[in-house]
Length: 423
Ligand code: DGY
Image (cartoon, rainbow, N blue to C red; front, side):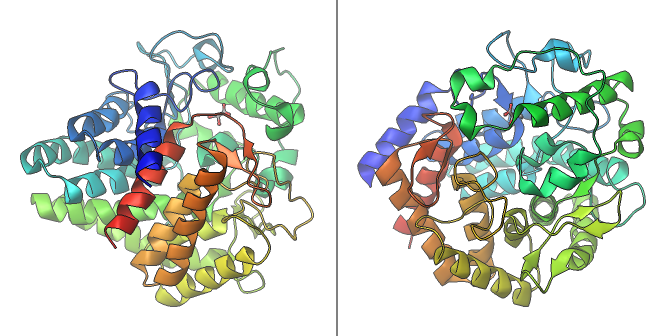
């Protein structure tokens, strides 16, 4: 175990550019939003100052309206597409114009709770708390204009689960006419068979061009987007962060933020019931444009376990993970292996991801589903022992896929091992 932790910490250092960490050199040469927040959890085991700095750097690039972008282009690198010139968001330090899963609230609460340097933690948490709260407020104002309690993603990249089967039908409504010619870079760094397809990329870029034509005005993007999906995983992460922010705000004496954050979480959790499917025994995505659930049993519905959902829902999700364990060698596949569109190696259409395992297992543990939580943790460590620190893995064979020497995989291994050491 010590060797694994040692190897993981070397990867964190290798990808550390001083104030932020790249997910992996080559394929992802900038700062990614949820990558950074989860990376900080691993960094904190060695260097708390550096861990807080990771999140501080991300939030220093928050937009004036509260949005925290999914990529910060700290320096030029033409090895990635789409780069800053495609986004054209007009920032001094360029950023993308969409967001990513709001895991920052959870991450700063966890760093704060575990901190050895309490004074630093209090200073940093006090400085970051209003920024994260502003981001949450931005979500509910701009991504839930009808006040349903749940937010929509407007681009598959926002979910972090770029090419999930969940988006296929809604994505059909995204045209490709007028997409400017482009050259992909991702397929030069990773096996093209493990990446999204060219047809998907054309739609990704069409959406970027649409939002750019609206000057990235977030008050307009939601209603203008042909793609509006309510993802239980995305919402589950946001709602957990709202609840954690409420607890953190209480600890810091920030009563107004505490009350508002708790109200956001409570309302959202109640609204999550509308995404529950008895047929699948899990939450499903909702196509907001069609006002209908999407019949796709993906891991998005299991990531919802991360949120403070009712105990009987957590139990049902734990049962679903157990059922999944009978179908694969390594937990947790990003799509049900029995489903028609399952693809064991193609990014988010089947492979297992360590960050997802961490979120699900953390949520199940919190809900008292400790056996299944431990099973996920053990399977994760076994997978890394077998296959190294890849971006994602074939859940049947354990074959490493995508990028190599991957930062958040390393961070999650450190977390899983530290937790098992702590009993
Ligand atoms: C990519 O480029 O593959 C990213 O997932 C988009 O953020």
